[in-house]
Length: 412
Image (cartoon, rainbow, N blue to C red; front, side):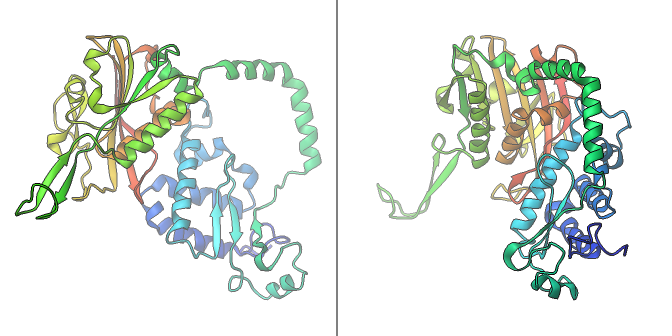
């Protein structure tokens, strides 16, 4: 078989060289160039598929080949492959929504697996003389025109043999599998364990989003009483950041799935120090409404230091180094805190980014079991009932936070 052809020569008009060219364009794009791991992930699965080894593209093999895990890798304790696969899918979506919009070949990573799918979007210039046969209906099963065939390497495992093997394996491990299913079905997820101390079905959780200070400019003569120069009027309790709003939506949806009632409160109406035995979820960074309690913790955001996350009051490198004047950035940091406030024994969950990107990224962490499992890899026994803080860092691409990575954690 010609090495320049894909494995499925009977169903594909795509050349391996064309797929590799498409992949290189993806890897050099802004969506991928900032993440070596995502580039390595995509390169590995594409090359394996082109080599006809798609049946080897499994969670364990990807963990070992791409992320350096040992052959004894256990996906139940380490979700790195699933997490990065989700990020690769997200980055691919951003690429094809932007610079790759007109790309003739699309590479996708379907949900539920790691075998890539190659789609010929416009085959007018990408195929050889065989395209003539395709137009005449002699293309070995490949549709032409607007059908846009999806090309995916076939399995090399004979179907009947696979079925016999499955039947034999099912007969051997039936009782053990049933017991395992029952155990996994009733084992609380990491999201459930994280939020368990905060949930009291009879008492609504207070969901509070920080108000963002906004200055409204009035030109001379535009307001009353009339003024002679431009005036900037602060509005400290009327607006919230877009990322903070998205974060509140993620958490609200999660609470609904857990059948936990909640109430949305304005940030200027809630004082944690006056709410005994109440669960309060504070979303976003606020230097006025709740900095007084966050400063009592080990990690907190210092608004006087460009949103730097300090460690016991000491300066760190955990801040957005390239933030623009309009608060856009290509990276962000955030803190997830869960603690009992000593004065009232209220449980406080603080999800706060240095900017609203960080808040959105932190919310995605505390509402996703795979992300939480990975973030809590160094958790101590009984972590689910302890106070905790997790400091996160994340890239920001196209105004969207990528998968957050843990840079520090603290339990007490």
